[in-house]
Length: 81
Ligand code: FES
Image 1 (cartoon, rainbow, N blue to C red):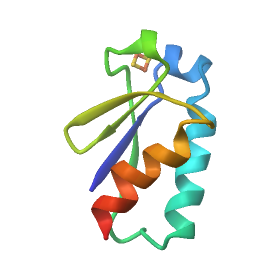
Image 2: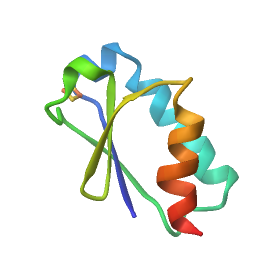
Image 3: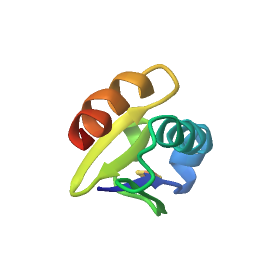
């Protein structure tokens, strides 16, 4: 699974750095290093809606520290099991 976190300027301002940290920690915690390929990407074209994260070909917006746990659970963890 390929997980790309937008590090474009708009997402950066909205906290993509924190999302990157949350993601790295969560992947480590669940021992998904072999299954999840993490990367950064430039603007995904959804700047208005908060930090954008692309999982394989699907873009998810509005990721922040509050929405991260449920996003990770349903979009990453559930698909890795
Ligand atoms: S800067 Fe992230 S979607 Fe545009």
